[in-house]
Each structure stands twice: as structure tokens, then as C-alpha cells.
Length: 109
Image (spheres, rainbow, N blue to C red):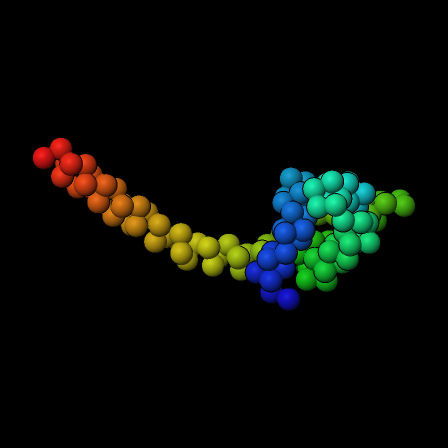
């Protein structure tokens, strides 16, 4: 599954957001997701499994717990895609600013 398909699901996207803040035990991730989405632990575990299989996150054993964290660079393809189009934004914003200024001058006249 590609990164965009993974992030299309709001639960998986939120798990990535939670783990972007730092490592969390499976229970900690589950608490956030269950509170926000009202899903059960099996559904959270399934989403964690999908993200793990896609190598977006990894789990580390810590005694009887599993600690989850993002894999560095796992979403670089998303970043590269966004960067390609982000370069266009300043040009378009500059053009919008010009048009707004032109419209303001026209209204005054």
C-alpha cells in the first residue's frame, strides 16, 4: 500500500500524528484513537499492523509492552510530492496579491 493510501484513512493518519509527537506504548496510542474515533482495541491493533507492515511505524519490545515509533524517512515520498507543488504556491499567492491590489485600486477610483 502506498503512503497516500495509508494516510487516506483518518485513523491511520491520526496514529501517524500521535507518533510524530514521540514514541508511545500501544496502549497510549489506543487510548487516543479510541477516545477520538470510538473504535475498539482490535480495530486500533489492525491499523497499527497495517502501518507496521507498510514500514511507516515500527514496534520495539519493552518488557510486556510494545513501544511504537515512526520510521525515519518512511513518508519521504509524500514530502517530495508536496514539495514539488509547494514551489508553485508563492507564485500563485503573489499573483493573487497583485489582483487584490488591482481590485482595491479600481474600487477607490
